[in-house]
Image (cartoon, rainbow, N blue to C red):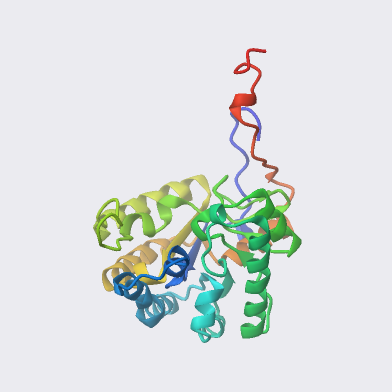
Length: 297
């Protein structure tokens, strides 16, 4: 990728023109546990909002995908699988992919490198114990990564789905990256907890979000990219959002040239057939305060 010339179209399998992945971050109560790890609150409101996900939201999403014959990628914090031990086996039985999403939904900026390695290895052990198989993919809570995290994901042989340096799969520091995008994540539009100081804006109308996602899908389809949809069990499992997703999936499945697949299949395709393309390296640059112009050199 040099100059201003567009790269050749990404080589999707069977001559497809674009790709679509339905991914679910099954956060449930894990962010609440992490945020309150030092002192548990007395209130039940936020916890119960999140408990809706495993109780009803997740089954609704699974049923929606079944009706559309779509296999999804479900990224599950290990503590959620620990609390609900039927989730991972049930998703696999439904033909879906399950991937790692932290142990406690711990945030990258709030843990040490050693703590990350500790909880990552513990997550792998729990997944293997519950499913009898090793997961293939990792998605960082809140979509933040560090160089150490990438190195550990590479060491354990996983693909990553946390970054957004391109809108097709690529390689970064030796790790296959299946990119995400904030504009196709339900949380920025619908997340609303209530209570003083907890929310920055009210949830949007589903018609607004549907229109935005259809516009996004049309543009990504035009440029031959990947539409990575990310929803959450406790957010998009609510009835109006299931209805919105029903309408959106009708649009997606109406395009015969779109490869509808899992993040794992996307990673495998890239690693097997496209690995020499977009092989990138990234490091955090030095502070601008060290730049010779700033230093007057």
